[in-house]
Length: 124
Image (cartoon, rainbow, N blue to C red; front, side, top):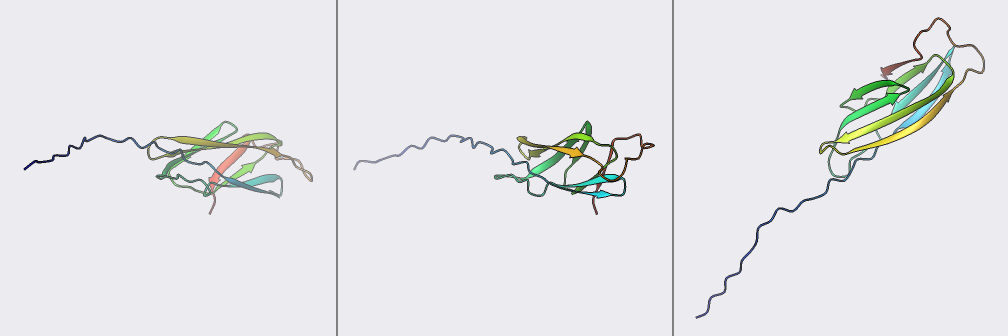
């Protein structure tokens, strides 16, 4: 009787990490003598894992969160602002989305006593 043995090789397969997708919406309005922008990162996603970090860069100001908070940014001065969101997934891959936002005041002058260009806070 003839015996057949089948051998199997064991190997580790490497599955490539798909990068996350950075996305945010921007809504804005005038309120008295400031411009308020609301930034919502909840359209960001990771196709094969989860996003573990949301890093905002807003004209030199930086905020880092582990949750997709909607931010409210109060702009006190006219000008062109660069807003970037970089998301990082649970395996370390990153993706960035950048938008340019122009602030102007059609009806009033900005607060001249305000020293900071902008203020960033978590929207309620």
